[in-house]
Image (tube, rainbow over all chains, first blue to last red; front, side):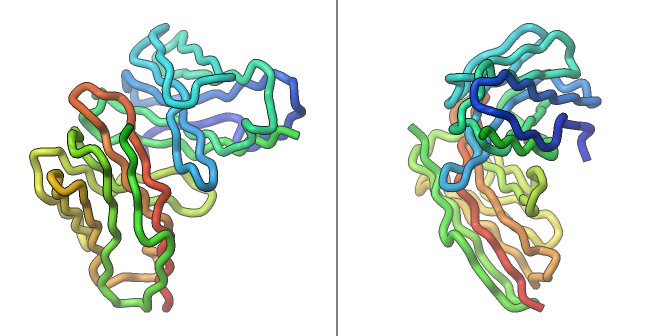
Amino acid sequence: DAGITQSPRHKVTETGTPVTLRCHQTENHRYMYWYRQDPGHGLRLIHYSYGVKDTDKGEVSDGYSVSRSKTEDFLLTLESATSSQTSVYFCAISDRLGQETQYFGPGTRLLVL
Amino acid sequence: KQEVTQIPAALSVPEGENLVLNCSFTDSAIYNLQWFRQDPGKGLTSLLLIQSSQREQTSGRLNASLDKSSGRSTLYIAASQPGDSATYLCAVTSGAGSYQLTFGKGTKLSVIP
């Protein structure tokens, strides 16, 4: 398995609070991605990174921000969590943009009350 | 906008049966297509990746085909086993240099002993 960890694995929070999810990789892959998975919608891309300090928006980026200060870490922040952000969040990595498979982390289950 | 559809949403078969999972996509200008497996509460595991110039890929009991012009892919599983029970996801990358995977909602497979 690709060396990808996500923390925390489970989190319960209240509406309006900030939340940060962390993705850590040991593969030295250049590209990192954050997805959310919801019943009826499948997986959707939130943000991705193509290098340290280089990020861009995905399909469902509203309400989320990201940061990547080191190759191995990609942080996803919900500035003010809402109930609609209750979801399972997956981090993924790849070494070449769009040309090879993405390797996924185990996911973070987030519940916003 | 690319849309990926997987039919059926759920499938139950007896052990030992050969089976086919279907994936269709609306925009044939894809760069590659991938099949993933997801076990309950887990992340995604890549099974097969087919580049747009290829017609099929094989790995063990799995064979994936791609007909780009008709916007279809199939995943064939031979001699199914209870351990094959999982949700199978199809995803496409649209256009050279694209970062975004567009996922189908998956087919949940149950192999009955």
